[in-house]
Image 1 (tube, rainbow, N blue to C red):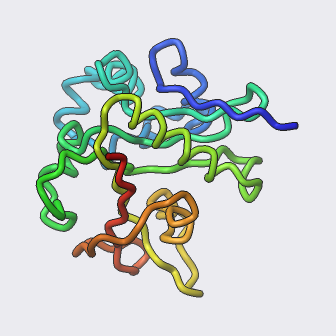
Image 2 (tube, rainbow, N blue to C red; image 1 turned 90 degrees about the vertical axis):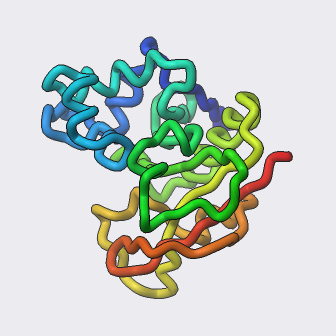
Length: 193
């Protein structure tokens, strides 16, 4: 029997997050900041260190996401939080709000190497949505692609696929002007009201 748990990435869980997204602890790695903050804010927050910048985000009222554990081992990361807490997304001209609902947004989903294609994304997304609901989110959005038989560039896989989100109750509510792997990105939403 497999046990799944999902927890926000608070400072005491930072190493678990790092084990999923950057197991080799490369300083120049994304650290899930590239699609969240402009470079000058990363620099200010981390005083030259991307890792330190992400650690700082983990100390905020709304940590930058959740880590999912399978039988106690960290196996997945989901960047989720209020859309307004993601300056790059909030200012995006390519991924515009569908309406004025103060949604929470998923901007990145990562399954740890060695654990892919083992059913991690469903409990990861369910756990992320449950955490957002417990924090009062009225809805959660994501901005995946719909590959429909096309090959997806693995460097862009962090955006997820339409099928992956529909499996856990998200519905397509709009389109964007953004692309990933030369494919248009959709707006999918799960209403929590």
